[in-house]
Amino acid sequence: MRVLLVEDHPPLAEAVMDALGRAGFSVDHAGTASDAREIAAISDFALVILDLGLPDGDGLTLLAQLRDGGRVPVIVLTARDQLSDRLAGLDGGADDYVVKPVEMQELIARCRAVLRRPGERLARQLRVGPLVLDTVARSASLGDRPIPLSRRELGVLEQLMRSAGRVASRAVLEDALYTLDDEVTPNALDAAVSRLRRALERAGCPLPIVTVRGIGWMLPREAAA
Ligand code: CA
Image (cartoon, rainbow, N blue to C red; front, side):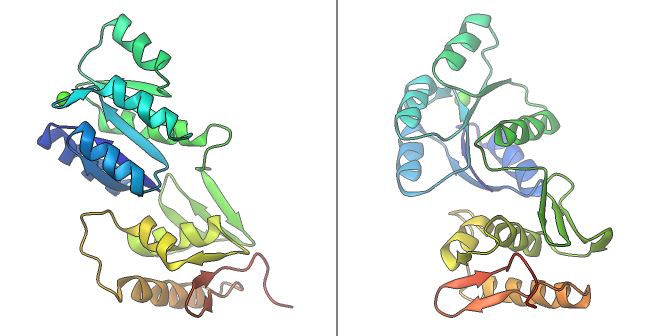
């Protein structure tokens, strides 16, 4: 689940990226409104976390621009806790509002709540056949038996389950795993898929990860007869 964080204060940005990363989100960071506009124009995000006080403009202007660009949920993050600012943020199209100093657990819970709203992309539990993935606990199981997986393997599995029965392209899986700033080695995704495939086989999962050569991978909805 890819998130864009727009925040100009480096220590806070790092803390938020760290907390969201551990919660299983991939976070891209922009320190200015113009950087945010550029990144948002070329990438698809599930959610934007937006600081209102940016060095090159008011976040509310950016909020309006993000809104014009399509239906990406936005959580406003700001030190301004006056009611009038709160209302301006929500009137401007924010889906939620978190006041600094930020409690990381609260921010994560609010991200999940926004993403769980109807039409949004995050369900708490994903199920495909006997496979279950808990997006909050960051764990996977086959029926009620846990499958031990690394964070990266879980990220791959989550995308495969979201697109079960369809091919998940290499680009979609890479997007789910890495942020713009990460070093992506060409083989990292293939390695993660191989380890995930072996882990599922060891666990006795009847659903195979099918390689669609040159395109990506697919998790079938049902085991082959
Ligand atoms: Ca700021």
